[in-house]
Length: 116
Image (cartoon, rainbow, N blue to C red; front, side):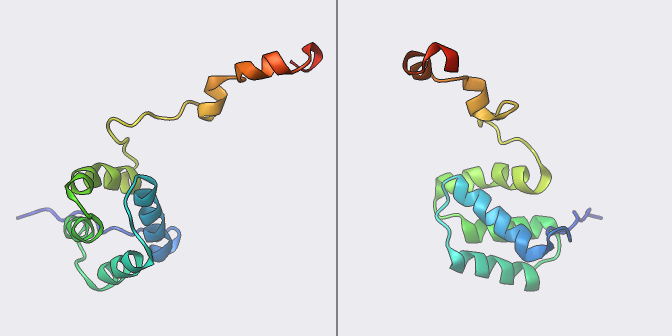
């Protein structure tokens, strides 16, 4: 007997909002996806397979355009849907990258002493 994973698209935010977020996540990681792919993916999940493994493979097949995207898809999928860290991608420090970098050195040179 095989185990079935829970289907994707939890109720929070609704399926369309969650899928839009995932598409934006992929775009932010270099995938060239437009409204057509978003619509096709939503249609597929609404009418297609109901177990998570099949949905994942269907989305991977539909949303990857080359071998590099195919190889990166699973880590990006896990990061979005399951909150896992993407390997090889630095995590932002507390307060964001700008806070960690501190004030630019140029400011110390250009600002008067009382503004530093």
